Image (cartoon, rainbow, N blue to C red; front, top):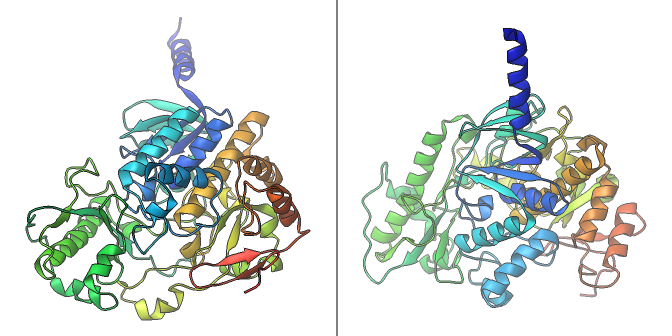
Length: 479
C-alpha cells in the first residue's frame, strides 16, 4: 500500500471517528443554554462547549442573578426557569427580595436549574473547554485536543468570538461600548472580614454611590431571597468603562475585578460595613467572584433582519413583527456613567419604548450558512441592544435558535431555508410569546389564536410606556 493511500485511509478513519452533532453551541450563556435545551427537546443531538463550570451565562456564571423585565411575559423556557426558581423559594413573592427586580435568586441555584433542564433534555456539556480552531463546515478543535463536527454551529459566547472566527459580517454602528461590571455576591458575616486594599484603589471613584439612595438601599437593591446580596451598582459602584473588545482578557478581568474589590473595600472602610464580604458559599472560584464579567454588549453581526429602535417604537411601520420569535418589555437601558463621553450619551439612558418583539432573522447571519447567533451578538442596532440585551429576551432568542436548528437538521435544510412561520409554530407549541400582547397568558384559552392572528397582521396591539412596565394590548384595559 503506497504512502498516499495510507494517508487517505488514515484521514477517512479519523473523520469517521470524529463525534458528529446536529448542533454544537459554543458558550453556555443565557441564550446558548436555551438554544441547546430547545434543540435537544426537538430530537437534535446537541453539544455545549462551555469554559466555566456552569450553564446560564450572565444569569449565573457572571453573577447577575436579578432578572430585568418580562415579569408579565413569562412563557417558554423563560417561564419554566422562573417557575423553577419560584418552586425553590416557595413562591414568586419570595423572589421579590430586592428592589431592582421581581425575580432575584442565588446564582448557584440558577445554575443548578439550568443543569437539570439540560440534563433532562439530553444535552451533552463539556465544561472547562473552549474552541481553539474552526475549519470547514463545521469541524471544531477543542482545548482538550479533541475534535467534533457540527451540522449547525451556534455562537453562545459572551462577546461573539465564534461568529467572528466563523466569518460573520460584523455590524459597524457602535458609538461606544457600554460600561461593564464584574458583579459580586456578598453576604453578612457574624464577624469582621477585613480586606486588603485592592490594587489601584481610589476612594473617590465610589463617593457618589450614595448620592441618589442611602447606603442601605444600595445594598437592598440586589438583596437575594436567601440573604446574600448581588453587587451590581451602576452609580459610584462597580460599573467600569473599558474598551474590552480590543483588550487582552486578563487585563479586562484584572481591571474590572479591582473596581469591584475597591467598591467592597469602600463599603467596609468608608461606610462601616466591616462584616460584609464576598460570599464563600456561592461561586467555586479561587476568589469567590463570578467566573467572568457581565458584558452589556457584544460584537454584533449582520443578519437577514436587523432589529432597530424605530421598529420597536413603531412596529406596524415595518414587517418585522410578522417574523416575531421573542419579546421584551424593558426600556432601552444603556450604562455609560463611567464613560468619559457620558454627557454625550446620556440621552440613551432608560429610553422609553413600548414592549416589543424581535424577528427570527436577527439570528441568521447574511453571509455564513448554518451559523446561528444566540446571545447579545444578534443583528440589532447599537441603540436597541440596550433593550434586547436583557436576560429574558436573550433566553427567548436562544430558544428560537434551538427550534430553528432542530427544524433545519430534521428536514435536511440549511438554517437560511427555514421559515419564521415554522419556528413560530414550534415556539407556540412550547408556550412562548411571539408578540408581547398582555391580553392572554400562554395557559389561557385563545392565547395561540391571538398570537397567530397577531403575526399575520389580523389583529394589532397598542403599545405604551408605563414607567418601567412597558406594555402592549390588543384590547387596552380601562385606566
